[in-house]
Image 1 (tube, rainbow, N blue to C red):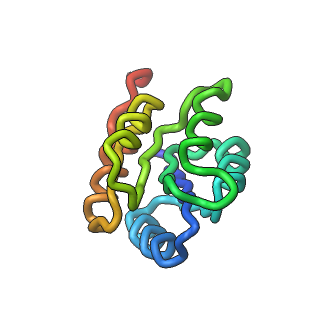
Image 2 (image 1 turned 90 degrees about the vertical axis):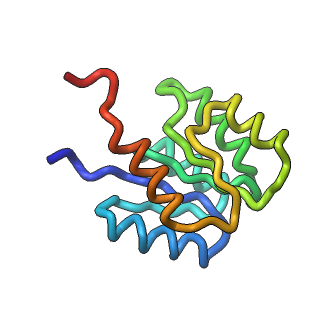
Length: 129
């Protein structure tokens, strides 16, 4: 059995955080929460989670700024799913350029998010075996 995977939720919407936390914890993931981009960045750098679920529009630091910072860190980008209420395809293109693994528009079904999380976290790592 592999070690428990850690997911960092970075979102300023309490309802969404609680829904995601409930679903992910039920699936056996350890969940950490940050309510804005600055806190998200701090926790990501300190805790090095297995996955970051990042809201694009937040106070203090947008999801994009967080992504840019994480991409530039020594370990490189932590696998990231970006969630957004934004319709723009430019944003999606930029997020993908920065290396997000998935881009999910709000409102979304929790099943869709969980499926994405599982695909990223349960995929066999290339450096194992």
